[in-house]
Image (cartoon, rainbow, N blue to C red; front, side, top):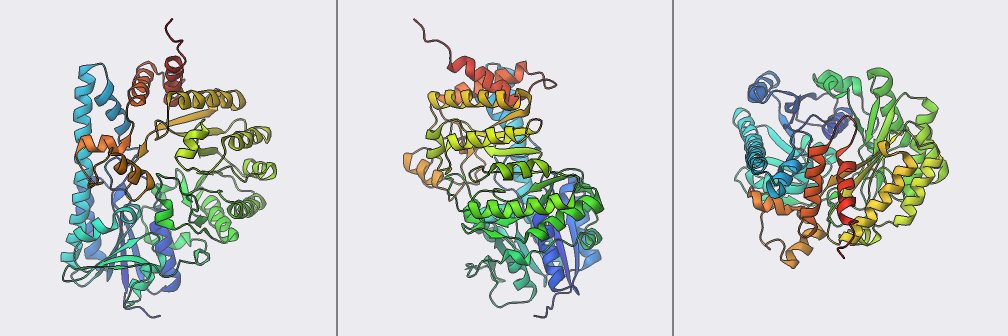
Length: 503
């Protein structure tokens, strides 16, 4: 279908420095269907905050685009990211024994909240600025934050804006081509300010997402090279059939898994490695291998990577249910840098979070990796401590299981990552906690009330203070050159939880 759009400007809203894969996939997809359209990518994430408005105005004036597409990654105030130390702040504010630490944490927390509030306000201001400068342009906004809070974004964005929930390739194409009804899951705020919701009627065929034309992307994205010195994201599939009760992937991507052609995935990795010198690949799927069909798909990708003899390290969130010794050996041989997985040493907690796997099977598969030569790489364990269902006994079980992993892989190679469940809107855990009275029925998930935010980072009594004090003690005694905070925290917890009962 022909398009009346002649030029598109993509604007990535500020976030921490991370490869903007979603925006790149959309721009590549549009180019392959409408090569006549001029495109340009502006990444505000790598521009000093004092210069962002000026740069946006300059690009609008230089490009005069018919369409501006915004990408918004994070919105919720407790969303974890490397740019702030929110976990340290909450721990110190609630549980530090030193008054000056608590006072400092209070001010640090207010600074973090102010930054999030300012970013949110500025993002909407940027959209409204573009609408004033380009009153006839089509505006589109998508990204992870929009997929979670699309209705809120639609309410606050300027008139005549399309708000895309979930993947954006086919939705963007339909707007580019002027479809009367946009494709996909889209809110549309019309020129009079009324909001219309269009639900997805047909899932996007991910086989249409061929290997990215990186030379083209480089030509339209001046800051492309700034993202190539760390992990670069490559997508192999979408969708997740599991129903972990704190996770939004099923809502965002759907439960049905859809796959890219393994050759296209390997082509993408190869050009990143051989042409641009990229050494680190992060597979951006909800989980790189999770079901039996997706594990078969993963093995085909590994076979392609092995044939090409690429000098890479790769990783991603991994589920171990269907990994065989043969696949484990291929993962190690193809450059597996780390095993990144959710972990708790208690089947009771696994079941409470509806994670959908057996602990004994997970441990046996980890033993299999050790036997396949996985001895120097890292084992990254994401520990949902104090999740609903956690008890002192389940914590003790987790500590004992991690000590087994220390023995298998070497203590220095096991990285337990301490985090608490973040309560997200529309998840089963949110419903459970509202029904239990932990959360008000009408609470605002985008609140800036610091006390409500601390409740949204789920770490209640009686275990909350125990874990927090262990974390703070570990921080005070930690030598970062020789120890890791997660291991040090578990050491303190072990001392406290295995302390003999008084006679």
